[in-house]
Figure (spheres, rainbow, N blue to C red):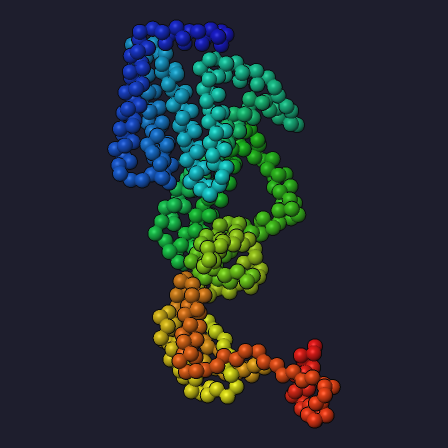
Length: 439
């Protein structure tokens, strides 16, 4: 039978009065599905839910329930009403369920990816095209023609139809694997903090890798690939990893090592290659470090294993800061040090135990160099702001006490002038200063 004959028969069936009964039943099933989803969803926000979505129609549950109700109604009315509208409604709802499942799973598994929207449009076009081909009767004929296009791989023959069906099956299996892994990861990470969060993150990453590996094996079987041939593929993959993919493989292995050893944990304040901040996420390939100014650095996990990393939060959260200032020669340093410690101790975020200290750390060319050391217990609130508060307190102290902060000073002598003979020979220190000035 030609596809046009099936399509014409469908049009004649829709034109019968019984089609109105089918239409009413389909609408009733859709309203019933909407009511059930609304009742189950309640007042909860389903923004990150695969089942419910942002709105009732965005989730997977609505088209699945509607499809189940319509299919059940078709079976119940099969002996009373010849199917016409049901033949249209079922593939439409099935396509809607596939689209919603794909989009919601990709949104949950890859929330920061900009490709989700493009994937949604691609899957939608493919699903609706399949519906049109199915309704018009072209799809079965097209699949029979695709089955005649074959390739030989050794003793195995593979048709184009088998490849398409296997690819779709593989995509569905991988989508389910991503869904399950994302749901389990969200459940594991819910309410976890600190060391517990790192352990659960390691378990979630391991579970996702296992599920994707199992899904890949099932997908390959669906395509028709003999799994015993994977031994050759494994050898080729090993060679590829040894040459071109060794960095990628090293990052993945390093990610699991970091999470297993717990040397670095989510929430730690670290310094890596002159970049410091809090670890906000540890994935299987990279670690995200967020600086206090809002900048983020994506560090490959291999770098965290092979280079020196300063973990300021592993032992405790106390951080030692310092500020350097100069005072003029002749200043009473002993009395000034006590006053500096007193005003720095009054700064709100400076710890009292251990308290601040002030030391004479150098004899500079222009003055005496004092270094003020102080501890803070909340580095997550920033370091530049508390250092500024300490410097302002020291500046106010110097202004009250009349302590001079020296400017750069140089002595310049002109050799060979009219009064050179009267002035006599230059002193050694003045000569040195003159040489520096001339240089």
